Amino acid sequence: MIPSALGLFFVGVIIGSAGSSGTETTSSTKPAPEVTVTVTVTAEPRPVDASDGKPAGTKEKVKPTAEDSGKEAAVPDFVGMGLQSAQDTAQAKGFHGLTSHDSLGRDRMQAFDRNWKVCSQNVKAGRTVSTETDLDFGAVKLEEDCPAKDQQPLEATGGRMPDLDGKSVKAARGALDSGTSVTVTDAAEDRMVLMESNWKVCGQAPGPGVKLKGQPVKITAVKFEEECP
Image (cartoon, rainbow, N blue to C red; front, top):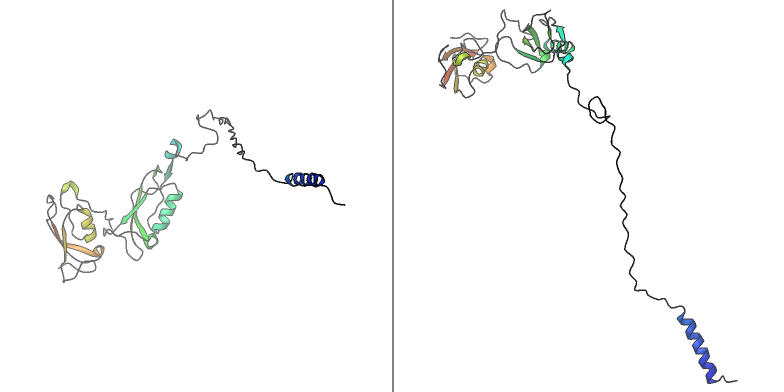
C-alpha cells in the first residue's frame, strides 16, 4: 500500500520535532559578578603590666642596675701570672675594663696574651675597689726579665719634646703628634729601620723639652742588643 501524501507530511513533522529537541541552546547571558565579602575583626588589646606601663610579655635588654654598678671586689695579686691567666682571673672577679702595656717601654702589642707575663699592675693587690675600675697590666714576654721600674707609654706633655733616649723608635713615634714628620736613621750602620719596636733611640733633634711647633723630628737608633756609638 502506498502511503498518502498527507501521511508522509505528518511523519516528517514528527521527526523534525524530535531532532530539534536534542539541539543545545547557546546562552548569551554573562556570568554574575563575584561578590567580595570583607570581614572586620576587632583586635583585643594586650594586657598591660601596671608596674611599667608596657604590654605584658615585652622583653627588654637587661641593663646594669645601680646595685650592679656599685659592686666592689678585692684586687688579686697578678704579678708573675701569665697575661691571659691574669685577665681571666680579673674577669672572674667582675673586672672587665682591662688593658696592658709593654713594661720595657718598647710599645709592643700584646697580640698573643699567653706569650706575655705580668710585671706590674696599676691597682695594688688586696685593695678593695669598684668592679668598674680599669685595670692595667705591665707585661713582658715570657723569656724576658721584668724591669726594675715599669716603663709607661711615652707622652709629649705640655707640647714639648719628650726625652726619647733609650726608648724604642716605635714608642718615640707614638709620643709625637701623628702629623709630625719623623726621620729615623741607623746610628751604627747603613741599615733600614723596619721593626721599630726592636730599635732604641740614641739621639734626637730637637732635644728634650723643646717646644713642639710642627717641626720635623730626627732620630738615630740602634737595635736593643747593641750599644749606641
